[in-house]
Image 1 (cartoon, rainbow, N blue to C red):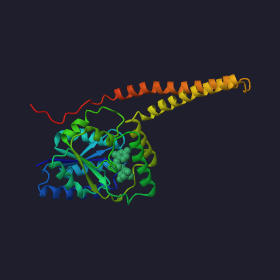
Image 2: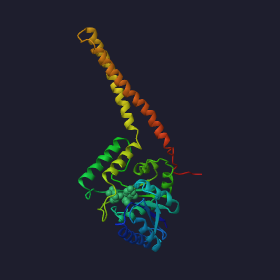
Image 3: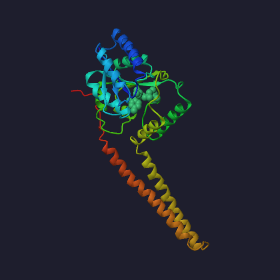
Image 4: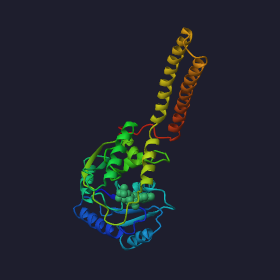
Length: 313
Ligand code: UDP
Ligand code: MG
C-alpha cells in the first residue's frame, strides 16, 4: 500500500488548525480503512514563522496523535518556500505527497481521485478549480489576467491550479534538482515532466481566519512568477530597439532628402538625425546587454539539463 504524506504550510493559522486537524484525521482514517493508503501515512504541518500559537498547537497535535507531524521554519519565508521545505524534508519517507493549504479551501474529498491517479501511474496530479464562484470579483479577474499574462510571457502553468497537487517521490526528487532561490512552484512542476493529469474540484471559502495573501504578497508572487521564468521582457526591449533603429535610418534618409531639396529650417536635419539615431542605438544596445544578462541569469539557476523518465538496463 502507498504511503501518503500531506504537506501543509501554515502562517498564523491558530484559528483554523483545530478544525483542519479534525477533518483531516477523519479523511485520513477513512482512506486507511478503505486500504487506499498505508497506515503510517501522515499529515505534516510546516510552520512558516507564525507569530501566533500555530507551532504550539502543532506540537500538541503531534504529541497526542502520531498522524500529525510538524516542521518549524526559523522565520517567515513565504508560502512557496514553506511548501518546498515541507516537500524536500519528507519525500524520502513516503511514496507520494499532497500539498494543500491549512484553511482547507481545497476540497479534501478529491484526495481519493488523486491517489487513484497515482495508482494508475501518474507522477503529478494537479488539482484544478472547476469554478471561481466563491472568489471576489477582484480576485477572479486579477487571477484571470495573471494566467493570461503568464502565457503571453511564455511560462507554462496549469490554468486555475493553485498549489493543491499530488507528487510522487520521484517527481519531488526531480524537483529537488532545481536549484533556484526565486521559487515559483507552479511554473517549476510542469518543467519536471513525467506523466501528469488533472482532477477538478470546487473551492470553498475559508472557514475561519483571513487570507494570508494580501494584495502586496499577491503582486510579489505574480512578479516573481514572470521574472523568474522568462527573459521575454528583455527580448521585448531588444525588439523595440531594433524597430526604433530601423525607423531612425529611414528618418536619416528622409531628413537628408529634405535637406538636399532645401526646404528645411537650418538645424532641423542635424537635430532629427541625432535624436533618432542615438535613441535607436541606445535602446538596441540596452537590449543586447540585456540579452547577455538574461543568459547569465538563466545559467545562474543551475537547473538540471534533463530528467530521465526511465532507464532500461
Ligand atoms: N502561508 C504561508 N506563509 C505565508 C503566507 C501564507 O505558509 O507567508 C500559507 C497559509 O497558512 C495557507 C496557505 O499559505 O496555508 C495559503 O494562504 P491563504 O489561504 O491565506 O491564501 P488564499 O487562499 O487567500 O490565496
Ligand atoms: Mg486560502
